[in-house]
Length: 394
Image (cartoon, rainbow, N blue to C red; front, side, top):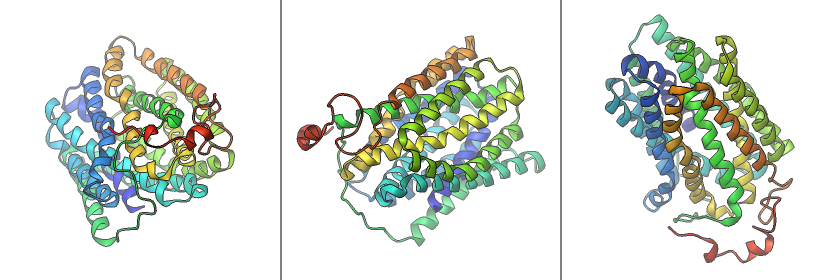
């Protein structure tokens, strides 16, 4: 919970300041912001390498080190208000963020019983949202009332994450590992639906992360305090609803939850494409962000079908898959943005439609041997025959 709280202090501050900092101090256009966001996703694309680090450091320790890197990268961002400096700070910050997120997923799926995982993940989102609430409140106070420059806001936020990471390192014991994890990359054919859902989720996320906020600033003239207020609203709603969403997923199952999410996203992205009123655009932004909590269902689906020894390795692999589109999509859509912002959001509609079709393949009761509703791939017989031939050691 403490580590989950440490992340948004840096990352939420970085996100809420980014568009205004990039546009007004680094003179970014859609081209540069696309390049920056693609660079930001490269560490996520390389998240599979976390499994090799586990040969020399335990997961819990590596999670804390990742928090330290996240905090340092954020703290120094404001000192580099130009393209190359901002690119380098972004990659450093992103390494810490993505490696921590990979490890948090792995540790949660290992430590928490399956019947409590969705609710626990919802609680972690709520904790992060409360921490984000503090970060957004600080940004509002610092930018509007104290008139602090972005450099000091970045520095304070990053330092807070570093302080919590040091506290976690010093004050908490090493918790026992219930099941020894594979120390090599694992790819299993029977996980194909999980991989596909993860890939589409990453592609969809880029539309929101890169271009929704950029739309607010470029088209509707939102300043730092306006963006911070939107993030503040998002944090409050996540605090209230994320635990409930986790329990709801636990009751109704992964397939209905994901079908609801992607049907809603198709409507949201289509409306984004043609919105002309700032209030409507802001409402879409809040709804879009709230839908992220339903992605818990993808993680709990994997936990139900997975060999427990695969969790750490697959957490890294899934983050890499999640970020395949993230490496090239922002650059491509950044160029599309220069011609037609609406086309960018309609691309999001198409991605949500593809995800909806994939979600239809999730069975009512996911389990090893019952991974999807298509054919016999991943059947019990195939699972029984799985072994070294079903592992891909890269």
